Image (cartoon, helix red, strand yellow):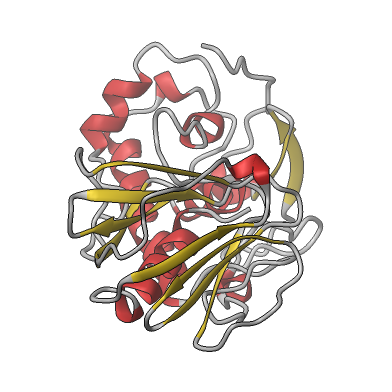
Length: 270
């Protein structure tokens, strides 16, 4: 599933190739996406990320929003190609953008530009401070890992990066979000920026089918410290990495580095 670093990677790559280009045609190959009319001849002015969404903004202050969800990918080619599982093709005067999605969960919509978007750079990748997170977490009895993965609260962080961020900050994933101290939230914010920036620099994490705009795999999988490493030694302390389940998601952590208190089931609605 594309998470923040993968979506940011696509936005940065698109920002280098399509601004200044005009849309020649939009072809919908999957009726599930709905009709996307009125984009012909529109001029692209920029591409930026909105949480996990890709916003292609036009000169008339409208935009196309693409949410890749589970298995969606974007590919860019200069020449027209036939790519399996293509659901939408946007032809521009500089080339062709394909939305490829085997499981058909990706969504596309159009609206007017507005609101606040995450920037394509800087050190605050998520844009939330420790105080912001602590305020959002006040009274929450769910685990901090589940809290970080709630897209209504913290946009863009999925399972892989939640595990890595909490390991980097030395915080047990099962600890209740509402119980974290200001110092612990500060550690999490610092770890978010370190982990997500590194993942963006690596063009994301390819464990199964993630590919960037040009069909190339990411490289952050070579930097994973706990995710997918059940039974292997922790790179930091040598203790065995453990896998458990929190809110139905596989959770990897080091009991030694991150505290050995028991993992409890958390409520996803608290």
